[in-house]
Length: 181
Image 1 (cartoon, helix red, strand yellow):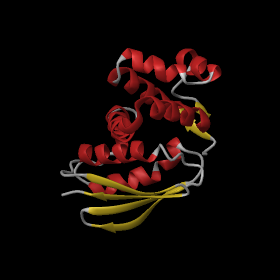
Image 2 (cartoon, rainbow, N blue to C red):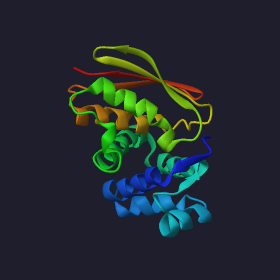
Image 3 (cartoon, helix red, strand yellow):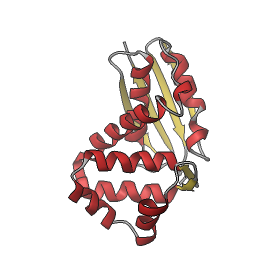
Protein backbone atom coordinates (compact mmCIF):
# COMPACT_ATOMS: atom_id res chain seq x y z
CA UNK A 1 0.00 0.00 0.00
CA UNK A 2 1.15 3.54 -0.34
CA UNK A 3 3.24 3.98 2.74
CA UNK A 4 1.58 7.20 3.87
CA UNK A 5 -1.63 9.18 3.49
CA UNK A 6 -2.36 12.70 4.67
CA UNK A 7 -4.38 13.00 7.82
CA UNK A 8 -6.88 15.23 5.99
CA UNK A 9 -8.10 12.16 4.09
CA UNK A 10 -8.55 10.14 7.26
CA UNK A 11 -10.17 13.01 9.15
CA UNK A 12 -12.66 13.70 6.37
CA UNK A 13 -13.55 9.99 6.31
CA UNK A 14 -14.15 9.90 10.06
CA UNK A 15 -16.21 13.11 9.95
CA UNK A 16 -18.28 11.69 7.11
CA UNK A 17 -18.86 8.40 8.98
CA UNK A 18 -20.12 10.28 12.02
CA UNK A 19 -22.35 12.56 9.92
CA UNK A 20 -23.79 9.77 7.76
CA UNK A 21 -24.19 6.57 9.72
CA UNK A 22 -26.15 5.97 12.92
CA UNK A 23 -23.96 6.30 16.03
CA UNK A 24 -24.34 2.58 16.84
CA UNK A 25 -23.01 1.65 13.40
CA UNK A 26 -20.06 4.04 13.75
CA UNK A 27 -19.27 2.49 17.13
CA UNK A 28 -19.45 -0.97 15.54
CA UNK A 29 -16.97 0.10 12.85
CA UNK A 30 -14.60 1.49 15.48
CA UNK A 31 -14.97 -1.71 17.52
CA UNK A 32 -13.64 -3.69 14.53
CA UNK A 33 -10.38 -1.71 14.55
CA UNK A 34 -7.26 -2.77 16.36
CA UNK A 35 -6.90 -0.88 19.63
CA UNK A 36 -3.86 1.21 18.54
CA UNK A 37 -5.75 2.34 15.41
CA UNK A 38 -8.87 3.17 17.40
CA UNK A 39 -6.89 5.16 19.97
CA UNK A 40 -5.02 7.08 17.28
CA UNK A 41 -8.06 8.08 15.24
CA UNK A 42 -10.20 8.95 18.24
CA UNK A 43 -7.64 10.82 20.32
CA UNK A 44 -4.54 11.81 18.35
CA UNK A 45 -5.33 12.30 14.65
CA UNK A 46 -3.92 15.49 13.11
CA UNK A 47 -5.01 16.41 9.57
CA UNK A 48 -1.60 17.91 8.74
CA UNK A 49 0.36 14.74 9.56
CA UNK A 50 1.08 11.85 7.18
CA UNK A 51 -0.11 8.48 8.52
CA UNK A 52 0.58 4.92 7.50
CA UNK A 53 -1.74 3.97 4.63
CA UNK A 54 -2.49 0.57 6.23
CA UNK A 55 -4.26 2.49 9.02
CA UNK A 56 -6.65 3.97 6.44
CA UNK A 57 -7.05 0.56 4.79
CA UNK A 58 -8.00 -0.91 8.16
CA UNK A 59 -10.74 1.70 8.55
CA UNK A 60 -12.05 0.99 5.04
CA UNK A 61 -12.08 -2.76 5.72
CA UNK A 62 -13.91 -2.27 9.02
CA UNK A 63 -16.47 -0.09 7.24
CA UNK A 64 -16.99 -2.67 4.47
CA UNK A 65 -17.39 -5.43 7.06
CA UNK A 66 -20.05 -3.39 8.87
CA UNK A 67 -22.04 -1.98 5.91
CA UNK A 68 -21.65 -4.90 3.47
CA UNK A 69 -23.15 -4.39 0.03
CA UNK A 70 -23.85 -0.71 0.72
CA UNK A 71 -20.11 -0.03 0.81
CA UNK A 72 -19.57 1.11 -2.79
CA UNK A 73 -22.46 3.58 -2.72
CA UNK A 74 -21.37 4.90 0.66
CA UNK A 75 -17.73 5.12 -0.44
CA UNK A 76 -18.70 7.22 -3.47
CA UNK A 77 -20.78 9.43 -1.18
CA UNK A 78 -17.76 9.87 1.06
CA UNK A 79 -15.61 10.85 -1.93
CA UNK A 80 -18.14 13.52 -2.83
CA UNK A 81 -18.20 14.72 0.79
CA UNK A 82 -14.39 14.90 0.89
CA UNK A 83 -14.34 16.89 -2.36
CA UNK A 84 -16.89 19.35 -1.00
CA UNK A 85 -14.85 19.76 2.15
CA UNK A 86 -11.37 19.93 0.65
CA UNK A 87 -11.97 21.50 -2.77
CA UNK A 88 -13.93 24.40 -1.36
CA UNK A 89 -11.38 24.85 1.42
CA UNK A 90 -7.69 24.11 1.63
CA UNK A 91 -7.39 22.71 -1.92
CA UNK A 92 -9.78 25.15 -3.62
CA UNK A 93 -7.17 26.17 -6.19
CA UNK A 94 -7.42 22.67 -7.65
CA UNK A 95 -10.83 23.50 -9.11
CA UNK A 96 -10.74 25.62 -12.24
CA UNK A 97 -14.23 27.11 -12.45
CA UNK A 98 -15.73 26.56 -15.88
CA UNK A 99 -12.80 24.44 -17.06
CA UNK A 100 -13.35 20.74 -16.41
CA UNK A 101 -10.26 19.66 -18.34
CA UNK A 102 -7.92 21.90 -16.32
CA UNK A 103 -9.57 20.69 -13.12
CA UNK A 104 -8.94 17.07 -14.11
CA UNK A 105 -5.31 17.87 -14.95
CA UNK A 106 -4.96 19.52 -11.53
CA UNK A 107 -6.47 16.46 -9.83
CA UNK A 108 -4.02 14.18 -11.64
CA UNK A 109 -1.09 16.37 -10.65
CA UNK A 110 -2.39 16.50 -7.08
CA UNK A 111 -2.07 12.73 -6.58
CA UNK A 112 1.16 13.38 -4.65
CA UNK A 113 -0.64 15.68 -2.21
CA UNK A 114 -2.40 12.64 -0.74
CA UNK A 115 -0.22 9.66 -1.71
CA UNK A 116 3.51 9.07 -1.65
CA UNK A 117 3.54 6.12 -4.06
CA UNK A 118 2.03 5.25 -7.40
CA UNK A 119 0.83 7.69 -9.98
CA UNK A 120 -2.31 8.96 -11.63
CA UNK A 121 -1.93 9.34 -15.38
CA UNK A 122 -4.29 10.79 -17.94
CA UNK A 123 -4.61 7.88 -20.38
CA UNK A 124 -7.07 9.52 -22.78
CA UNK A 125 -8.44 13.02 -23.14
CA UNK A 126 -11.33 14.09 -25.37
CA UNK A 127 -14.02 16.75 -25.02
CA UNK A 128 -16.43 15.48 -22.39
CA UNK A 129 -14.35 12.39 -21.64
CA UNK A 130 -11.15 11.72 -19.69
CA UNK A 131 -9.59 8.46 -18.64
CA UNK A 132 -7.55 8.38 -15.44
CA UNK A 133 -5.20 5.48 -14.93
CA UNK A 134 -4.12 4.86 -11.35
CA UNK A 135 -0.97 2.77 -11.30
CA UNK A 136 -0.17 1.61 -7.83
CA UNK A 137 0.15 -2.01 -6.75
CA UNK A 138 -0.44 -0.89 -3.17
CA UNK A 139 -3.65 1.11 -3.76
CA UNK A 140 -6.30 -0.59 -1.62
CA UNK A 141 -9.15 -2.24 -3.59
CA UNK A 142 -11.75 -0.50 -1.38
CA UNK A 143 -10.35 2.95 -2.20
CA UNK A 144 -11.35 3.43 -5.91
CA UNK A 145 -15.03 4.26 -5.26
CA UNK A 146 -13.94 6.99 -2.84
CA UNK A 147 -11.63 8.43 -5.51
CA UNK A 148 -14.42 8.18 -8.10
CA UNK A 149 -16.83 10.15 -5.90
CA UNK A 150 -14.13 12.75 -5.29
CA UNK A 151 -13.42 13.17 -9.02
CA UNK A 152 -17.13 13.30 -9.83
CA UNK A 153 -17.80 16.06 -7.31
CA UNK A 154 -14.68 17.99 -8.36
CA UNK A 155 -16.01 18.08 -11.92
CA UNK A 156 -19.41 19.26 -10.70
CA UNK A 157 -17.84 21.99 -8.57
CA UNK A 158 -15.93 23.10 -11.69
CA UNK A 159 -19.25 23.38 -13.53
CA UNK A 160 -19.78 20.05 -15.29
CA UNK A 161 -23.22 18.50 -15.63
CA UNK A 162 -24.13 14.84 -15.97
CA UNK A 163 -20.81 13.63 -14.57
CA UNK A 164 -20.28 9.89 -14.47
CA UNK A 165 -17.18 8.04 -13.26
CA UNK A 166 -16.93 4.39 -14.22
CA UNK A 167 -14.32 2.24 -12.47
CA UNK A 168 -12.70 -0.80 -14.01
CA UNK A 169 -9.79 -2.98 -13.00
CA UNK A 170 -8.15 -3.14 -9.63
CA UNK A 171 -4.73 -2.65 -8.18
CA UNK A 172 -2.12 -2.49 -9.59
CA UNK A 173 -4.05 -0.67 -12.33
CA UNK A 174 -7.40 1.06 -11.88
CA UNK A 175 -9.07 2.88 -14.75
CA UNK A 176 -11.59 5.65 -14.22
CA UNK A 177 -13.58 6.76 -17.24
CA UNK A 178 -14.92 10.24 -16.53
CA UNK A 179 -17.66 11.62 -18.76
CA UNK A 180 -19.72 14.79 -18.55
CA UNK A 181 -21.98 16.98 -20.65
